Length: 429
Image 1: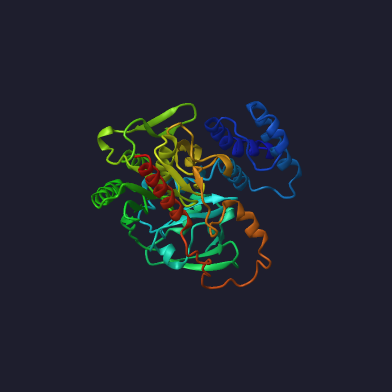
Image 2: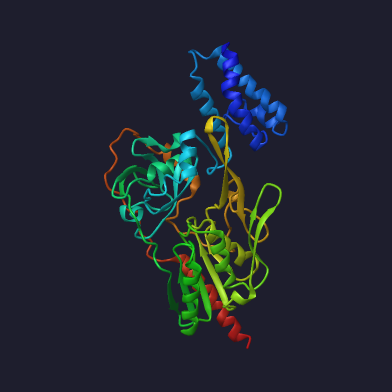
């Protein structure tokens, strides 16, 4: 068989299979970008672009190409061009995925995404392995041991971070205003801190949440009931750094404060898949409230904030949240390989997904913006790379802490807002 025939058999067998699933999305990065943009809605034109690339590989590449690598690279590029959570899986990875072979591996207590191709820390669980080692929300992980995170998918990066309990993983960290550093993290089990509650200014209850995993809404409910018994008339719900959890749990938390209407949705390509609506019998607090969010707020916690904001239940104070919450489905391809494809997104009551196309339409925008000076923006990733004057320099062995911000300006603002409303209500009596 000719080289051209081998190219079409090896590449198009995979490309067409994926193509049928994603509906003709352009791929292969910057190759023929202008033409792809002009013909984005024309599947036939897209296939001509693929054919053109194959012809160049056949006619112009300097060596005999390794067609298996070419095919795998093309499929990985196709999935990677969609979002951080869609990925191409090898046959071995498909088997592991279906058998849940990685379930016994231990993590480091951090939630990750991908920014500019690099592994990005959305949040680190308080007192978890990552937090104890010095990993912070907003850190960019350049290397996982000796593997560059920019060369692999988010799925593969998470597999590398996880491992047997008691073993170590070395993470080369880029952090705004600091030199690159390598942080050693010992993998192992960790416990998510319990929900905390206390009273501020005599009448304002503060509930600090660390996760929205299953069961957390019951703990939040218990704290809410305890604070109201202590005389709390207003509530600050602190969801900063909360990136783990289920959408159902987020809806349950929102339902404690909202007695009717929609709370959250799961949206597919052409329709709403699931709607979470309030149960009036589960709403237990109707006083004034404020929700605190920041860049480390993602997923289920965004659903709570969005519900409070869109239902005009209270103020959302802080910084624009990260923007996450997706659901994937595995499509098995020929030769046992697979495409783990995002098929749904978590969304607000109005149906606005939290995962957007860029920073301006991603996450939840607070009704009152209060930025902390130590919060890094995801947009800084490329500048962090550019700022490395000597990439071969030996990294510092221990992390350098960010400058401490003594005053919690976001909490202070929330207390002020609720206190002013209390005073305004008294003045109107």
